[in-house]
Length: 266
Ligand SMILES: NC(=O)C1=CN([C@@H]2O[C@H](COP(=O)(O)OP(=O)(O)OC[C@H]3O[C@@H](n4cnc5c(N)ncnc54)[C@H](O)[C@@H]3O)[C@@H](O)[C@H]2O)C=CC1
Ligand SMILES: O=C(O)[C@@H]1CCC=N1
Image 1 (cartoon, rainbow, N blue to C red):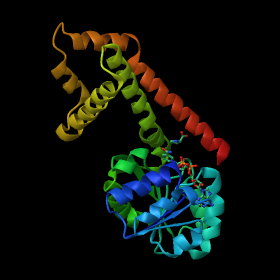
Image 2 (image 1 turned 180 degrees about the vertical axis):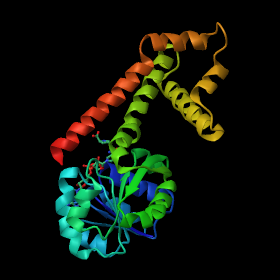
Image 3 (image 1 turned 90 degrees about the horizontal axis):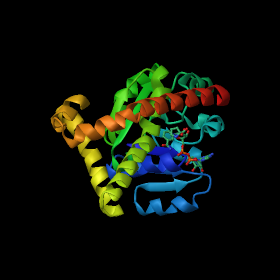
């Protein structure tokens, strides 16, 4: 597989690391306007770093666009002449819909819209994808690419903004929960490093229980809450303080914001 990542910033480099981590490409082009700080990636023999997007497109089959929304239109116009009908175009751009990409490139291209998160760098991204009519023929290929770097789900395009909040912003939400647990553990006497180790592995174990046993969170909670015990006492206090409610409200607020950004920018 010959992959180009157009826009090697935060997300683009996270994807590049995920691809390297999973041996997911035969060759990989990484592009950026100023390539100085990504030059080191050429130490991996199959990686070419360049500011020449046309060259990256001509030498690759799968094109992953990870630039800021305001830059995409011009970049697509610039590379349009180098595209063939065999290219698979994967956009990670928030809010930039398939109709708009088709408006620039034409509907005859395989166009996939994706929403990964930064955990793609360690092969653990939850990635949502959807495709245009032509791209549906390549959706299994896109799914296979993202499944090598975590877990993927095909969703209707109307749900992409909601998926962005849950999966991409979700990394920040879960980080804050892990950080808060760490602060609690420090107050109970663990040093900071130990406290984070306890918090993150407990978080990972909780998610693994659900993924591997296919069970429901409340069923797992019932197994831990001893009657009159410490768990239910703590859990009920968290709920009295609005734990579930604040999470739900934060998610809805984030969604309201992403909906406004879409209307203003695009
Ligand atoms: N950071 C995240 O967790 C997620 C971000 N996204 C989306 O991914 C996109 C990129 O986000 P970030 O990586 O955070 O942004 P970023 O600003 O870190 O990266 C964008 C990169 O594109 C480069 N660039 C600009 N013009 C270029 C050009 N003409 N040719 C080649 N490269 C060019 C910039 O130098 C920069 O390195 C955004 O549209 C964002 O909505 C999507 C999911 C998650
Ligand atoms: O915060 C944001 O708006 C973008 C979209 C998802 C992650 N970062």
